[in-house]
Amino acid sequence: MSETLPSIGDMLAATVPMVRTLNLEFVEASAERAVVRLPDQPDFHNHVGGPHAGAMFTLAESASGAVVLAAFGDQLQRAVPLAVRAGIDYKKLAKGPVTATARLGRPVAEVVAGLDAGERPEFPVRIEITREDGAVTGEMSITWTLRPQG
Image: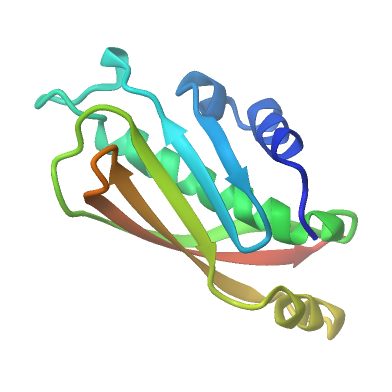
């Protein structure tokens, strides 16, 4: 299932206060990929003038949440998406606005089949964080699950 961009961004902004706090901008959201931008904001800079590591983590996690909602939004009546574990590698100095691109790492139908079989399926989302010049400043991997309701 693919939600329209405003509904995904609006849903995350309404339910996740950090999305509003960081003024995250939802550029694209589909069941395969989500793109979220963190504007350059001095209030969220680190000691070297770029976005703080925590802000970059939140950016990447939010992009992963957007792709998960786009992919599994039609399952929300019966399952809650939850992040199980995450790891991030900071590769290069980030300066200015940064963008996170999240990609679903397992086919939607396969995950839903696991849910249908009574499992609590897990699936990876991989995120790349880039500067405006295209340089990769960070890479993150998050394992998500769909926890059945009830």
